[in-house]
Image (cartoon, rainbow, N blue to C red; front, side):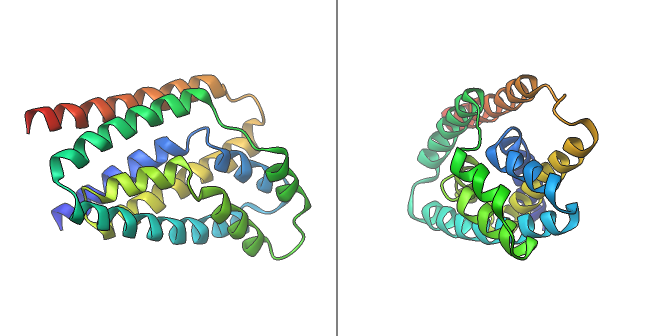
Length: 193
């Protein structure tokens, strides 16, 4: 149980940070301006659970196939890369914005489909793969799903309450700093181990 709880807590924190300022948060905000928050959040939850199940399966398989020390080094480097990616910023492409704006079907199905496609190859998916190489698959899946849903719920709530007054650059710097700390911690762990 201790390993499951640790994996859940670490994955929740890392993916929550990864989602800050991500295009998925922008999509959540866009959908929340057109639809009620609960169906939007339900669509996000379903898509996230599926994408992160695939991510965990891939990461867990890699974790069993590769030596642990090299996985730790790669994970540390990946988190430093995520820090740079976060500083670079993320935005919706015109096609993604148009897809979010013109959706007319079931809100849950529409949001779920758009989020599923947007998350493939995204930094939260890659972070989940990375985490699953080192932690149990169940805790990583649960934590990564909770972290992303919580971050997107925050975006929906903040967007509805504060509009566009959120300091996006400050959020990006904070998230990048946390990624850098995680990356350096993993690299230090690999060097000492």
